[in-house]
Structure formats: C-alpha cells, structure tokens
Length: 291
Ligand code: OGA
Ligand code: MN
Image 1 (cartoon, rainbow, N blue to C red):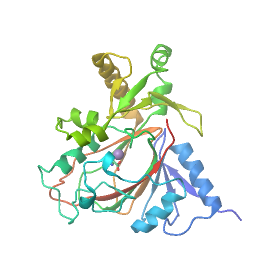
Image 2 (spheres, helix red, strand yellow):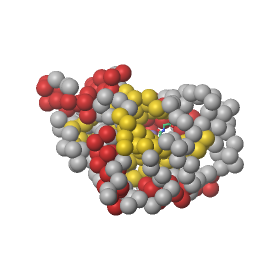
Image 3 (cartoon, helix red, strand yellow):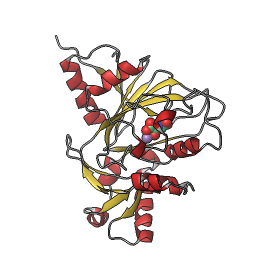
Image 4 (cartoon, rainbow, N blue to C red):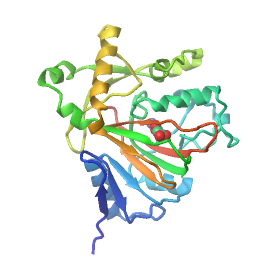
C-alpha cells in the first residue's frame, strides 16, 4: 500500500505544511516523488519538529538535487572563518567561535542583506533551485521569514507590462544588493568575484510551465536600459510582487525546516535582537540550471 503524505495548505497561493514525515529517515522513491510534486505545486514546504543533524540535512537535501557549495567567490567570509561545512550557507548570527557577530562587523552587515527581498544565488550563473533552511535555535521574538509568490503577480500584470518585460535581462550581483544598504567598500578581489551575471526578468517554471518574475535585491541593472529607468522598473515590479496578498510570513518554531523553490518565490529575513539572542539557521541549497 502506498503511503500518501498529508498536507495542510498555509496560504491561498502557495505554501503547504507536510505532516507526518521524519526527515532523518531515508525516503522511499515513492515519497521522494511525492515531495517533488508537492514542491512543484506549492513552491514552499514546511516540515515541523525536525531535530536533524547536518549530515541528515545534507542527505535529505540530496534527494532533490546537487548541493550548491559555499565558496569565496560568493561570500565575504574567508574559508578559515567559516563555522559550518561548505555544504551549508550559515544563516546564523554567530561567528566560528559561536559568538555573536559584533555590531560593526563586516560579516554582520553583509548578512543584513538578507533582510531585503531576494531569491537565493540569483548572482550565480546557475541560480539556486531549492533552499532548505533548518532552525536549530531561534530567538524568543522576531526573526520571522517572509516569502512572496512570484507566479501570481506576474500573471496579474497588464498585457502591456507583460509585453514590456517579456525579453528583458537583468544584471545580478552581490554588490548591487549590498550597495542598496550603503555597503560600498569592496576589495579588488571582491569586485572581481562579484561581477554581475545576466538573468532573464521573466522565467518559466520547468515543471508547471507557469511564468514568474525573477526579481531579487541583487538585480541592479537591465541590459541596454538607462540605469535610472532600470532601477525604477525593478522597484515598481518588486513593489507589485510583494504586496500583502502574495506574502506568507513564517513564524519559526525550533526544528522547523522550510524548503522553498527559488525559481518562483522571493524571501526576506526580518528584525530580531541579533547581538543578544542566538538564531542558528543552517541552509542547504540545491544548484539550479541557467534560468
Ligand atoms: C536564507 C535567508 C532568511 C532568514 O536562508 O537564504 O535569506 O530569515 N534567510 O534568515
Ligand atoms: Mn536567502
């Protein structure tokens, strides 16, 4: 008999909670297919009460693709300063000694870039497919994560706007997202490593064939457009796409694991007392294909 996973829809447009699954256990091929279908359909899956190790998180992630490795080219953290293995993006407020990042530390300020709407690794030639974020320790208040659906706002654009943006290509770079927040000092090496990559503004989901807006804080230019007009259009589309009806706010409980499809959603972190309370979140990321 085939076990069917049960789900609880969390938002009218996307997001489902998957109940009764222990991510520490190996997954049968049938369950793998069901999860794949669910993420294609809902874009975001929530798994509660998953007290998993790093190894178990990696093993679960690898059922759905190839891990995108952290490296110096895509972060300001030097290898010797990493707290976690290169299979993880460290989304915590901790340094390698498990102490809070100092208020003025460059790493902390760089990490604050997660608080503006983005899609993970849009600044890499192959932007991320899925991200899996595991809450190992959470603060007593704040630190929610907000998600925005990128299919419905695209579908609701006027025909004229759809025509205007159909073939536009954007430049994405970590420097664009950080410059927005006033971080503008980059070493020559960083300038080299963070060179912009080109991504389409409209993309089609390979499984559902639905189109979406591929926006992110990292998008700073539109190819062949004057900079001011480009920034205005990107601001306008981001404002449209992140209206309340398209947004789901996740209030974390310890040991939640949230898996999202970066090809059809954006997300952002929110405020908490990050120099006083621990928020230890660990992300595995699955590499995508060129958009
Ligand atoms: C991420 C991210 C937001 C948060 O894990 O990619 O942006 O709330 N996280 O920590
Ligand atoms: Mn992110």
